[in-house]
Every structure is written in structure tokens, then in C-alpha cells.
Amino acid sequence: MKTKTLKVPNKLNELTLGQYQKFNKVISEEPDKDYLQKKTIEIFCGVNISEVSNYKYNSITKIVDIINKMFENKPQLIDRFSHNGKTFGIIPKLDDMTFGEFVDLDLLMGDWETMDKAMAVLYREVKENKKSKYTIEPYNSEKEIDFKNMPLDVALGALFFLKSLKKELTNHTKNYLLNNSKNLTQHQREVLTSLMGGTQLSTQLADRI
Image 1 (cartoon, helix red, strand yellow):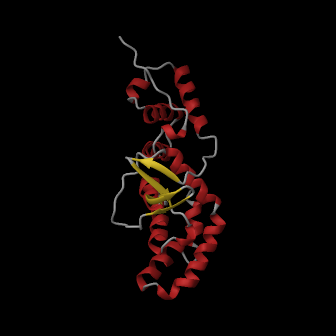
Image 2: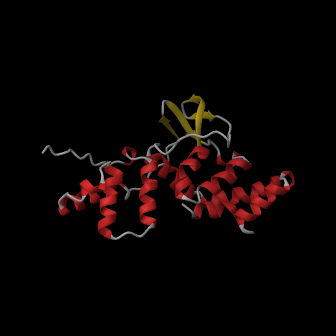
Image 3: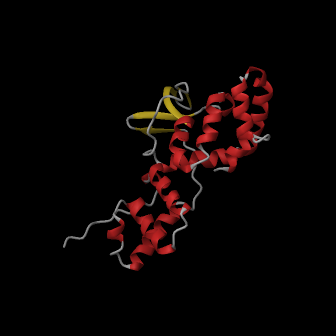
């Protein structure tokens, strides 16, 4: 019987956000150690769990160790990346984030199952690209982009970046509300009140990362 060659990833850019979403769902179910190890290999190496059950125990632990080491280093922010033949860029200035972007991002980042949709708010197709400067297309909440296959290093880099900006995001929320409260509709005020719980929207967003 011919042995199937197993490709074990050792860099985050070899994984996708969709794979990590599946992995996070498994973790949330609090599985036992053996099952988690087998699911880790199934998800990140692309093999059926029934095949993993036939591997030697030492081989399984070595593969899982390799995968776990990928998550030890803090991922760096990647402002632009290629996906499905297009270039996408993160919102150039978070201070210029619109109300719609801000609220949708907060809602979608509250659950790993919708993290791909959150990334579609944060990253949009680049329209003009000039060395370090670029512009992205306007935000359209109705436009759907499949980011489940986006590189995992891009998604995690963005999340760590936002977490490090927790203080700046909180200040941005305060300033935004002070400067724009008169322009908000009653519905928008209700949405903000619900999201903020009477306190700070940005703090909630950063705490969910």
C-alpha cells in the first residue's frame, strides 16, 4: 500500500483564516487532548481524521508541536495582500473610519465564525497603489467577499495590531461620538448604546481579540 505524503505547514501564511475558524470552533467545545491533536492535524494538514488515527502516536505529537510553534511568534501587521487575483489593503487611517465600518467591525469581530466578514470590512480592494500610500474602495456592507481562504498571518496580524491600539481606539470612539453625535439618527444612537453598554465601543472590540 502506497503511503500518502503528509505536508505539514510551518508558517502562518501557509494556513487560511477558514482553517483557524474551524480549529477555534473545536477548541470552544473543550475536547480531550487526543481528539484535539487529531483534529489539529486534520484541519491544518488536510487529511481525514480516520487517517490520522492510524499514525504513530510519536508522529502525531511531533506534527502538533510543529503546528503549535507557528502560533508562538507575534504576527506582524500586513497592510496589503493578494487574494484571488486582486490586491486588498487595510483601512489606511483608522481615524477616518466611517460609522458603518466601525459598527459592523465591532459586531463581526465578536465571533470567530464571522471573522472572515470582519476582515472584509477591515481590508478592501486597493484602487490606487503608490509605494507606501494607497487608497481602497468605499465600504459597501452589501458587497460580499469570501475571505475564508485569506492567509492566516494577515488576519492574525490585523487582530494583534488592533489589540495594541486599544487605547487609541477608545479615544477615537470618544472623539467620534463627541464630533458626530448630533448627526446620528435615533436608530444609530440605539445601536451605539446597545454595543457600548453605556461605556466604550472600542474597548469591547479590542477585548474580543
